[in-house]
Image 1 (cartoon, one colour):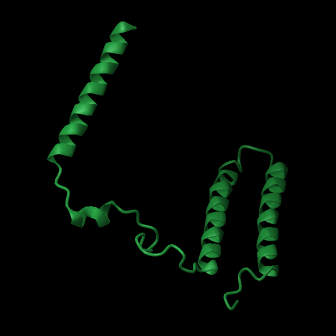
Image 2 (cartoon, one colour; image 1 turned 45 degrees about the vertical axis):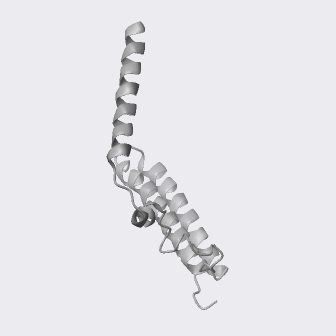
Image 3 (cartoon, one colour; image 1 turned 90 degrees about the vertical axis):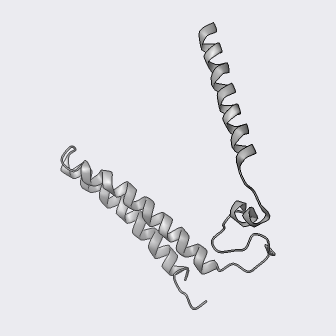
Length: 117
């Protein structure tokens, strides 16, 4: 136990030493301020944060995430086709796809897919 504690202390000392050396040797200037600032989808982080944001862009992003997760959930259905009973597999996949289609119909019915608003 003492050996592990000593090794831990040595590792911490070496890592802190390397970080201190890198901070001393690094060249930082005023021009590097932009490199250190966060990049937020093309928005300038140093300007006003109250710019209008497109709701359609947000909805397309949400739709992409939903369909991306759907694909990730459909792949295991395909790989389990030969492992389980055909009737159980068909009911499960039909129920899953039915939920996705009902969600898409609800989005369409609420005019969330309409770009003219």
